[in-house]
Picture 1 (spheres, rainbow over the protein chains, first blue to last red):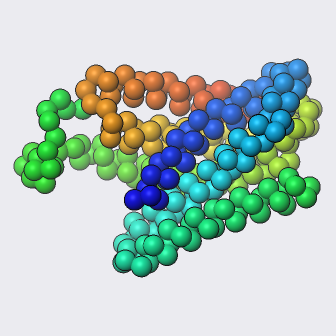
Picture 2: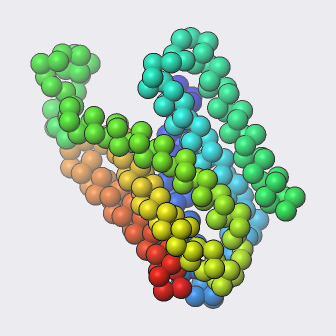
Picture 3: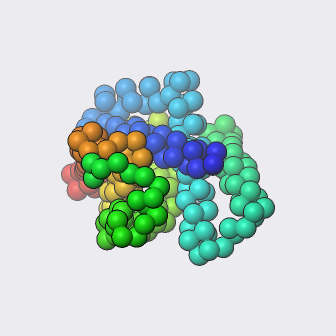
Length: 108
Length: 130
């Protein structure tokens, strides 16, 4: 139940977040001044906070989608297995997100 | 989208032909296939963002301008836009009906078209015109 809501919420967050990617790419295609503005906003503490949330949202939605892919083969559907997979995707999404930011942002 | 009231009985009774057998199956398969392709998209996106976040235009053009990075990226953005529209359709179907559903679905299509075309278009512009 909660995982279904989170899957939908992260899906909607990714939906909005894709606009951020489009804005960045359009600015890069346009000129240096537009790109400077985008880099300033995305590089600010608030921009970084949003991008961190976007990262988790993308990772979690991906793992949730893969979970659905497993269910499509009628596997892992028993009580206990479902809860295990729910907790596994939740834990994995947090770990993968922290790994990405630790390796590529905080330690880079 | 039907205007009649939906009851659990009308859903359970196969004779009401509740839902659209062909379109719903197509949406389901489209969503699963585009979703799996999106895993590749996230991989490429991670590479692009890690490599180019905060960099200047010349650096972005040198990486995205590579044909074998730019064209797959543009293609994957377009596929992601299809997945976005399809996923938002599921949400809209749950909360809206009739003309309100058609209006929100129109806005959904417009948003995904704009994001997809702007994103993929910007990448292709960088690939072919720098």
